[in-house]
Amino acid sequence: MIRHIEFANLCNFRDMGGYPTSDGRAVRWQRLYRADSLGWLDRDDLAAFRALRVRTVIDLRHPFEIERMGRVPESEGQRYHNLPIEGRRWDVNAYDEALGVARYLADRYLEVTEDGVANLRTALETIADAGNAPVVIHCAAGKDRTGVLAALVLSLAGVSEDDIVADYALTGLATERFVADWRRRHPDAALWPGFGLAPAEAMRFFLTDLTARHGSPERYVAQVVGLSPAATEELRRHLLTESRP
Image: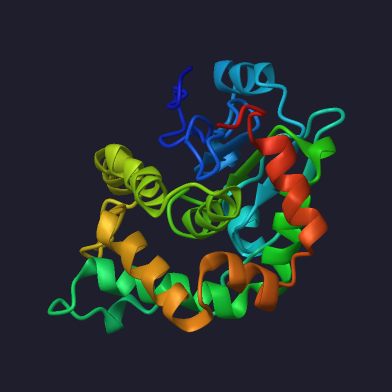
């Protein structure tokens, strides 16, 4: 199967299938995708997207981002949920070069788990419902907010931390294009050093911090987000293959 799905105007559209789980199963292909802004879909890209038969789109951006950059084009029968999970806006002026990009990003991701609880619960409940699949989760770059939600889903599915980190870091393959696109649209704007970067250490730091605070990502989802055991089981049932050891 193909993990990276090529589009002319999207940089970071990926299938989250194929990762093995602790009970000997694997995440099913063509059930859950992650992406950058679907507002860029047009012409041939839109036809290719519709060929995936996506049933549900979860857009994690703020409404003002959607107003400025657009949303996924409407399609008959497709469900659309705008569920912003970022509370505090990033202050890149507070970035400390001595601590590094990975530490700065991990701290922002932990803030999402504090500020975005209600919409994270709705997003996870939506993904857990088999009737909503295939689902695409996305934000602007498909890296930060999408990375947090993707990490929680894969953790619930039983995917190893190493694979969750590796999945996150795949965004690094799109960094050069992200930077080029940004410079083309904002030729006079300055970029902070971490723009478009997805260092593996950022996700590793985040998962370590989340575990230190709550015991594990799964316990965070159960005790703070409040996802029910039934929803967690349904998520595993329809996202994972049936074969066990």
